[in-house]
Image 1 (cartoon, rainbow, N blue to C red):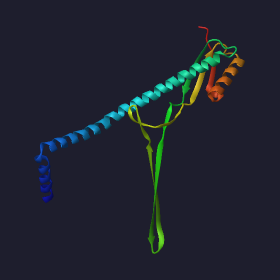
Image 2 (cartoon, rainbow, N blue to C red):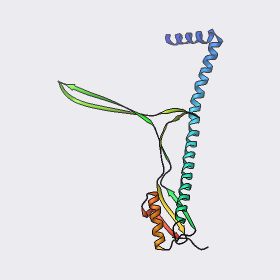
Image 3 (cartoon, rainbow, N blue to C red):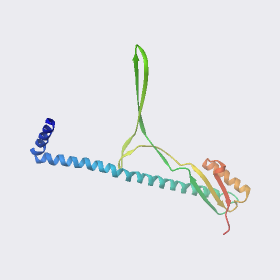
Image 4 (tube, rainbow, N blue to C red):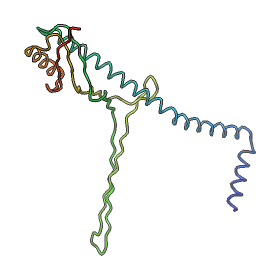
Length: 191
């Protein structure tokens, strides 16, 4: 009970002594609350923005690939009009620079001069390296891994010809470094 009185007396001295001290204390608490609230609500918006950027990057990547394959395929002898569709296994993956710290803690229990029990504990801590960017602190990008192609469909005039189909499959598998079972060639309808 005596400790409660001492705390109350100290609080009264702190807050009752000067209005400036009370005002600074209240502003400090309000600042801490604002930082806490911004970290709760601000983080979700950044994640959604990052996901939107990744999705947009993947769409651009697919469009560019489709254009390149279209240009290549329509240049093959025997191919007329063509349509190209490419699907991906995943989205663009960003790999960031990080540092890894490892701590090992070994414990041995002895009984009567002999080791009775041995324990070893490893702790790992991985931290992403941050740098000052245009929008404040940003993670340092190490590399970008382009998504893998899941499949390619080419519908074209001349697609029914076995030689043309083989030429298209050979060109696409070589250009995209995929297996031939991921490429489908079909005849374009006249409609």
